[in-house]
Image (cartoon, rainbow, N blue to C red; front, side, top):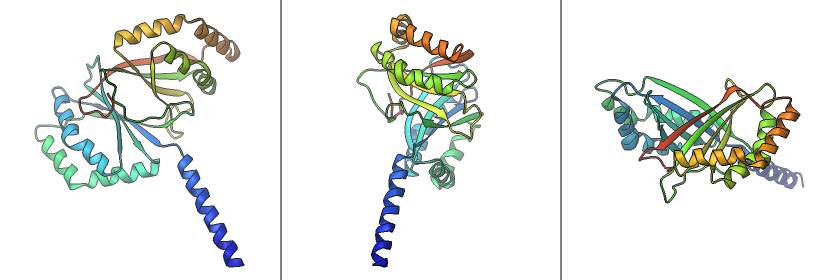
Amino acid sequence: MNKLIWSLLSLLMAATASISAAQEPRCYEMRTYYAPEGKLDELHARFRDHTIKLFEKHGIQNIGYWTPQDNPDRKLIYLLSYPSREARDKSWKAFMADPDWQKASKDSEKNGKLVSRVVTQFLVPTDYSPGIKPTVAPEPRAFELRTYTASKGNLATLDSRFRDHTIKLFEKHGIQNFGYWHLMGDQKGADSTLIYILAHKSKEAGDASFKAFREDPDWVKARTESEKNAGGPLTVDKGVQSVYMNPTDYSPTK
């Protein structure tokens, strides 16, 4: 009888662990590369011909690759996904040690480094984010990366406004919700930052959609009530940053 009870208990513990793992949010990583003058095309070539395939080989999911429409700093912005932060570290260790990557990196940099600066952000999806996965639309799209810095103590209130009002009103006005994230807890600004990506038919279409959105009486009411309850704006001064981006030719999301 004791053996039977122990067996049942073991099965229950395993099932509970499996459910917990399945419910654990995936880890996302947004990486921004700055290429030296004249090196952005070579950086694209290395990703196109080598890097994205080697990422997948080592369990790193490619979500999307973009360049800003206005890009004086020669940025490449891309988004990766992993089952967990621990899995991320293991995958990158294996990737960096892969002889194929080492050869591709060395060969591509014979005439100089392709990256002068890297900015990395570890992200976790919000509870109201749509499912985040690579998607290809029938027609070309412009993507918009938006970063909000919440006023002190108001990130949860900002989330509530997005959850209950904003994302629905975006869709009403032709704005596609691609993904919403918070910074992971060990990241600077985790208690005040909301990062999200939208998709539009074009920058011009996006600007027109936002104009209609801002004039919508439902949005005006939601914003007014949320700010009244919070005692002021939910974001700090100049706390809304927007970057329009084009997907690269090798991006899984277009």
